[in-house]
Image (cartoon, rainbow, N blue to C red):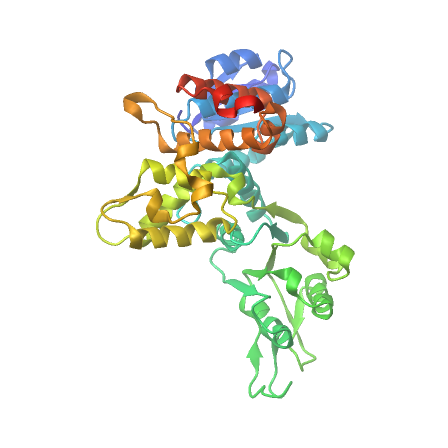
Amino acid sequence: MQPNNIQLVEPNLNAANQMIAVLESKGYQVNHFTSGRAALYQSSSAITLVSSHITDISLTDFIRQFHQKASATHNGTTPVSIAIVDQAQGMMAAEAMKAGATDYLLRPFESEQLLGLLSRVEALDKPLTDIVVESWRSKQVLQLAHRAAGTNATVLITGESGTGKEVLAQYVHQHSSRSKAPFVAVNCAAIPESMLEAVLFGHVKGAFTGATQTQTGKFEEANGGTILLDEIAEMSPSLQAKLLRVLQEREVEKVGSHKTVPLDIRVIAATNKDLRVEIQKGTFREDLYYRLDVLPLHWPALRERTADILPLAQFFINKYQMGSACQLSEDACFALAQYHWPGNIRELENVVQRALVMRHGDFITAQDLMLPVDATSPTNLPQIRGENGRVEAKKMAEFQYIIKILKQFGGNRTKTAQQLGVTTRALRYKLAAMREQGIDIDAVLGSAA
C-alpha cells in the first residue's frame, strides 16, 4: 500500500469527480469505486474515503470489513478509513468511529478540510520516536490525541497508574502549535498540600514564612505552552476552587499579590481515578470536572492492548541495553504476552531492565524476566507453530491473549469479542487463522468450548 494512493468509495459521480480533482491536484492517485463490496474486493490503498451513500453494504459493515482485511494483510502501513457523512448523520459518524473508522468528514466540506484531514491521518503512520503503539485501541487513542493537538481545548487523560499518561500529554503538546513553547508537568500528589498553591501560582516575597524572594509559578513558566496537572484528583477542594478561577479567567495571581498575569496556555489534566466517583464522594468539584473534561482521552491498561507489549519490551531493550544487540526468546515472548501487568508500562520497563542484568548471552529468556510462574508458565499454553516451526512473535502473543480471554469467558465468543474490542466476525476470522497454525481451539478450551 502506498500512502499517496487513495481509494474513494462514492456512488455520486459529481461528488466523486470534485474530490478526485482536488486530490489529484495535490499528487494523490485515486481509485474510484461506486460499490462498497467492489472496493473491499479490490482494495489496495492505505487510505480509504467511504461515503455514507453506498447502498450495497452499510457504512459500518464496510469499515469493519476494510480493517479486518487490512489486518490480515498487514505490511507495516497503518490502514486509514475516513467516513464521509451528511451534517444530519451525526449518529452515523459516531457508529462509524465505533466500527473502527480513523476519522470522519461532514458534508458539505471545503477542499481545505479534506486535505487537512488527510494530512493529520497520514502523520499517524510516520515513525514515532516519542511513543510506541501497535494495537488498534492504542492507535485509536493516538488519533484522538492528534485531533486534540490541533485545538487549544483542555484535555483530560485518564488511565491506571503506569499506563503512560504523561507520555500521551507530551505527544499532544509536541504535535500542537505550542510545541516550541514550554511543556511543564506538575505532579499534584508529590507536592505537600501547603506548598502546592505557591508552586502552581507562584508567590511574592513575604507571602508566607520562608518566602524570602518572589517566585514564578508553574502556570507562568508554561505560559504560551502546555501545563500538565498530573494526579489532579489529589488536589484539595479549596485549591480546586482557585484552579477553576484560573481556567475560567485565563489569568493567575501570585500568592500574596493582587496583580494578575494573563495566561495563554493549554491545560492537560491526568488522573488514575474516576472523577465522577470522586464527585459523588464530595472530594472533587463537579464544575471543575466539566471545565477539564472537554477532550477526554483514556489510555487502556496494558493488559487490554496486548499487541503493544512486545514492541514496548523491544523499545526498552534498545533503550537500556549495553554492548551487543539483545533479543527476546520465544518463551520470553509467551511469558510477556500471558502476564497481566498490574503495574502497566512502568512495570514492563522495570522487568526489562532487570532482565537485561540477569540475562546470559544475547537472548532474554522467560527465566530472566522473573515473572510469577503461575501467570506465565508455557507448559499450560498450546504450542503454536508456523513455517519452519516458528511464527512471528507478535502473532504468537496475539493468539495467546485470545485464548486467555476465551478461557476467561468459558469459550463464549460474543463476550470474548466484546472484551477484545472486535466484532464476532473478526474473532471468527482470528480463530480460523489459529486453526490454520495447528491450534485445536476445542481441545485448548476443553469443556468450556
